[in-house]
Length: 306
Image (cartoon, rainbow, N blue to C red; front, side, top):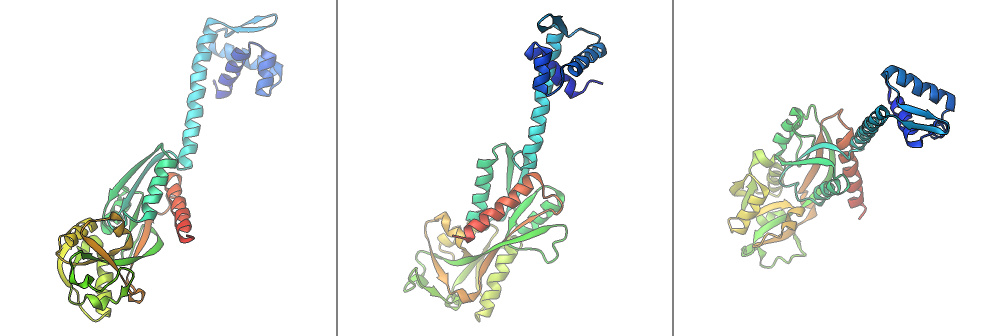
């Protein structure tokens, strides 16, 4: 049976045009190499090299064999390197989901940008999905990982890592009367919003944040008057900009720079925050997914040290 080592022997002899020099290059002794080349010729039933007094030259059959041998060895080397790149997370496929409110957090955008920059051969697929859809997509294998704001009560079949808790802001239409006398650098209690009309994310889409806001308002002594619900965070801000009410959003959403909106901070003791989780299928932490997990950990640590 012809093995890869036989191909390497033939290529080395053809390139060196000398058995002894080829043996030195391969780290072999000259007699064993000569025997291997002769055995290869016997197996093929052709003469690969003309033996001369001061070396060898390939025959026509030898030239044809060596040309294909080089191509095969190159393919093998490429296959090995491709496997190593995949193991390092530099090649392959990775499908990442994210909720609308997580999409604009600098950790999420930074990690995705780093993956694209440092692993250009990695086929990266991004998909916006609410938390419940993301969980089902993970279980079904459509997603490899997802950034979400809430975890289900029993997240079976999914691994989760709590990354951070993000402060939240009140988003006002620019003309809202509550902005009068509320400086940008001042924090006020949630109870200051008792008479405001709220715009919230539709609960099935953002159950975690929706429930957190309702619970915080209840703790502050009032039930929020919800005038509108939106299925996407950006839609919520659009309704705020249109003057239909106020909303409470993660700080990172202010990076959108939406016109017609002013943001104010709440007192920290209100306990309102937007958690961010990374979820993935357990037992598959290798290759591209392992790289994502490592990048998220490193990026999160770097952000925490600033």
